[in-house]
Amino acid sequence: MTMGLQEVLARYPGAQTFKFGDSAELSAELLALVRAGQKTATCGALRDYPDGSPETPVVGRRDVALEWDGRPALVIETVDVSVCRFCDMSEDFALAEGENETLEGWRTDHRLYFERNGGFDPEMELLCERFRLIEDLAVEG
Image (cartoon, rainbow, N blue to C red; front, top):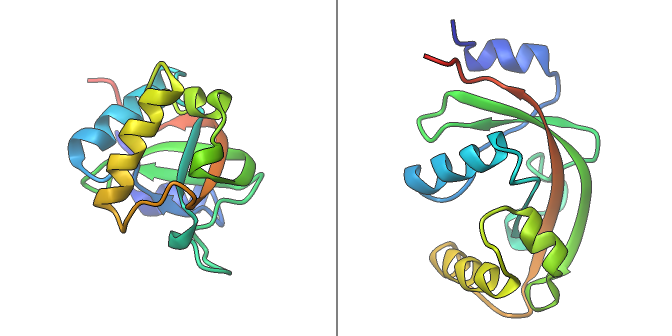
């Protein structure tokens, strides 16, 4: 039996919810990478996290990643948060995102992502989060 969102949030007080990616296909791909242990980091445009925004990751907080349709998928715990300009991204962090095998591949894919989601600038600041998987909420059929 799958847990509903309210039940999950009751088990993880203070948790925020979020979705990986900007489409159902990308979201499913990224959730699979987290489940496989390949994705242990993520980033977003700092402009999307205004001061005091509850969505801003907090070290030690556990948050709920949702399936594209809003069902709870995973619980992650933030282990590190930093800010880095796109042009200064380290290969180590890019590879921890699990989506690409090279920093150049990461730059290409993320430039396209940011162009689709509010605009791209090579000097834009990114909110970078490292996390660990706490619980996979998917039920195996």
